[in-house]
Amino acid sequence: MVATYDALMALTDTGREFSYGDRETMLYALGVGLGRDALDETELDYVFERGALKTVPTMATVLSRGALLRGSGVDYAKVLHGEQRLTLHRPLPPEGDLIADSRVSDVFDKGADKGALILMETAVRTKQDNEPLYTTVSTIFARGDGGLGGPRGPAPAPNPIPDRAPDESCSLQTRPDQALLYRLNGDRNPLHADPDLAKRVGFPVPILHGLCTYGTACVAILKTVCDYDHTRINQFDVRFTAPVYPGETVVTDMWREGDAVAFQSRVAERDVLVLGNGRCGLAA
Image (tube, rainbow, N blue to C red; front, side, top):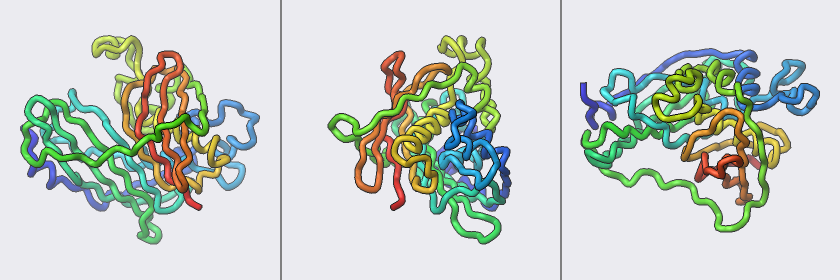
């Protein structure tokens, strides 16, 4: 089966029900680096159910994981996660019963030798009141599927980064075993665990999940800008630019822009940009 523009644009998955509890909420927080200091009272609010458990906003990206493109003909061996966008209509509760509606919202054919961009949107609502909770948009770069038809674009423009020194920076060191922990949130791709596979595809060791780096940047902004108040974040968009190796230090530079924070992240040890064009929306 070969992927085509019309077939991709017709893909939908509606009314998918799923649930999560405080175990998943705490596991995600641990997976993106919170709770390293078990005596840090502030971070304990994310990893210990002693009271009103707080939620890391970017957890939304793992709660509603689906398989919309399965069987579509897209060559998964040549797929990259290009961008991730998240809009929170209200703060994530620490547990809940949810309903997800997913669709392919756009496809941009860059040409037979250049691949295609596929945008997948998932709108999630709570089962209790049927009200919107969050919306995610994932941009997939399908390197092997150019020439499938449809418009060339342009795709949505990336968020700009100010041309000045950052207002704040936050360095967070990842753990050597962090990919092994983070994969328990649902992404069991062996590229993040199997040393032999990693070497066969050109990496010296298994790489950290891009969405784990995404969550790490969210923790940096929670810590530096939001004083650990998760309810302040209502948007978190980013472009993935390079992988992180577990154990490396992720430095997130931030620029305050009114009701938002522009940000990007790089690896200190290699001075490589790993997240670009970031935008974190802030509630008043």
